Length: 74
Image 1 (cartoon, rainbow, N blue to C red):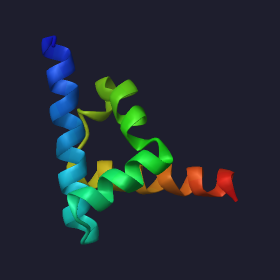
Image 2: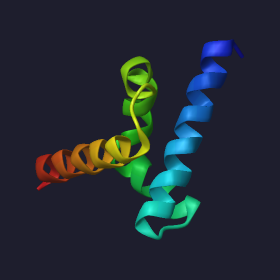
Image 3: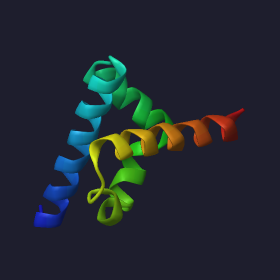
């Protein structure tokens, strides 16, 4: 695994843990939610700009991303 791949994996894990803490969800629940709406792919593909942002901004960005995906499924 390359250094960048490790950094991305750590970033995704950080987002899962922080989102769970912010929303009162377990890691498993967050993983299910993120998988359902493609959040992990988004976080991985957009790592470069996203990892430079603060925690609160990231949580808001993830909420917005999920909301957009929910509306597309409706």
